Image 1 (cartoon, rainbow, N blue to C red):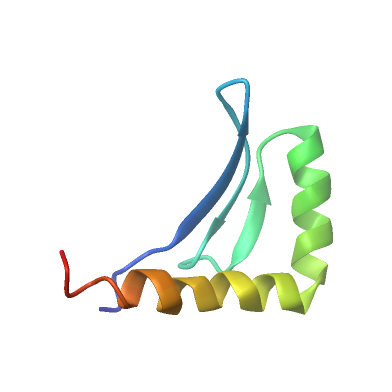
Image 2: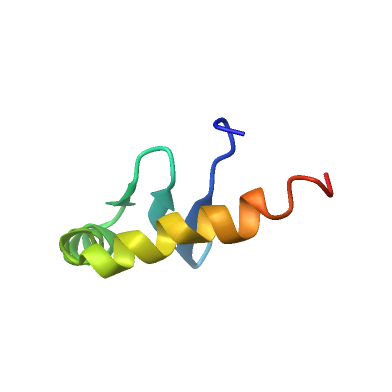
Length: 66
């Protein structure tokens, strides 16, 4: 169960702008706009906590189905 990874990404015009992965535990930006938002979201502990909780709520909850 520890190798389950939750990925939350933002795309615009088929270009990935930012991504949160539960293995890294923070947002990463891939464009200028994405980097600015990732820095802002990484400073907010509630944003990080919500995404980490999504791994447990979504991924681990559905592991028995797959």
